[in-house]
Image (cartoon, rainbow, N blue to C red; front, side, top):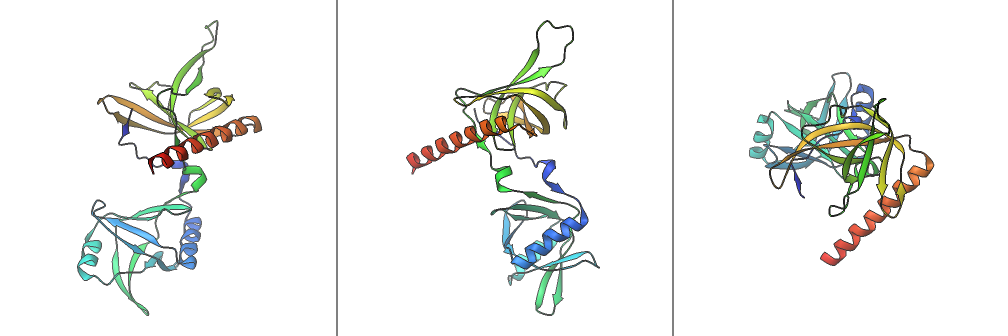
Length: 252
């Protein structure tokens, strides 16, 4: 079962504090970190580094290449994406680039971005889960009149040490809304054990399956898991990573 068109940023990694954004940019400048610039719907790209930050004027200066034709396309673009994908992942979008002359030569000038997405590798590294024998996740449904506790059962598509992704049918159950929290959720990790923990909905977006049908990918975060639950999560992630490495070796 292949899922397509599933790219979605997780809001919990978006930094909007101005002073924190300045700190991130200054760190990039100090380390001379290479950034990728992408524009023209991803058809054009190049590398750059942050030269300096002018906090008083609220602007950032970055290196510029020597190709005048390329630079012309860059400065005429209305949406330019800056990314760092090695180690700590960083991403922001700027819509107004200008060329300026500094003491050391020409540079790109942009406004200090209003928000930056910053994701630790251990947080965004997700491993696809088993498709042929999918792992169920049971979310309790409040019902005072029911003799037995009812559950909404969904199946995992991916997992990380910070949370899971599940696939929900269309139409989406009304209890699945962004930031909704659910206690006593059971995840049946094979060969590891069954959790009982709190999950919070972080993201919801529609996906299209190979047969053209619509589902909803629901990203859910683990909230303060107990040591026992943490141990099960880590053991299961280790199993998935080991299996993924074994498959890769066979392919190589």
